[in-house]
Length: 443
Image (cartoon, rainbow, N blue to C red):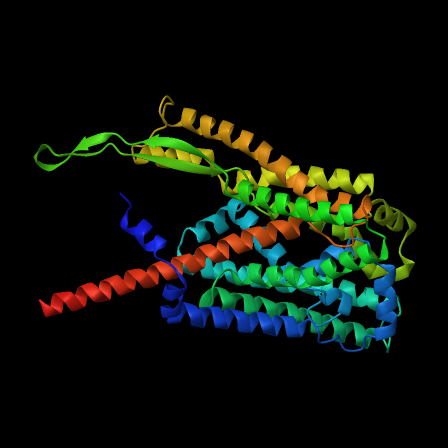
């Protein structure tokens, strides 16, 4: 027999959505702020020469800058006030999360509850400001050195860097407002919106190449089929988990009554690290390009050589990309999941894994299972992230499909849909409670 929650979930429909006024207002609020973000990507950076910028973008096509342009929704290609995007905040959040697990004072602050979380969020904002300042100055220096500014000089660099930092901080505020008053995670939705906004143009470009005979119809059909298969594979892997059976012994309470003895599961995701390894790997591989931005065209020869070796599709780039993904998959999994702490918590509450002694043996068993899962997850992330490199360098596909962008699209879609379902479920529960109160008054 179906439970009450399952019955409510089965009754969710457009009719139920029409009655959920709070959910509708949240969705409209989210949509409104995302429209503000998209409009901001078309506001040009002051002092930029459009003709020189167009020439630079045309020369830079096919490089790793295409990835950044995808994440920012084309803001870098148009050199708008949101050209830095929200990536400085993402990097600061990841760094703060790692420091929280490794620095005892921050770990203690994390355990203080709401007040500790607010302080950590404040530190993250400060980190975002610092990272955005460094990246904005590098971008402004690169624009000035490459002759993109209409009035070169220190004044242009200061104005451009200040505008870019202000754009990133405004996007951070938008994301926090969406998270608090809208639906879904605001920062993730901003990245999601930027990626999705570039898809129609990329698809139109692919079809145009097919009409011109550059891409054969067979290749286009193969790309469509492969896209469907890869998306289904990513959804399956993101939802895949290994459930470890946990048993709790029965215990005697008042008047000899026996309670407990139930079974539960400890879910371990195959991809515990999520999209963090590809983001960190991409950030480290982009560092040489950021350094080149500081020097402009007059950079040292060794830096130029490293930048050319780390170009899209180059063997060194692919090898380092996979190695960094595997490293960060294991590193971040070790940070977010501590087998010894989980084993101690199970032991305190009387839980145990059947056939495994509580304590150290349980911790070793969990570490063994998690290591095997992380190997599978690292291989999965590497394959998905290598897919766009193969498509663009070997098959000349004119858009970035796969990798971090695909992982973000799938994970954000699943998370947002789950939150919408939770709001609908909560609305139905509220309706049931109100109806029960009315019946009680009538009686």
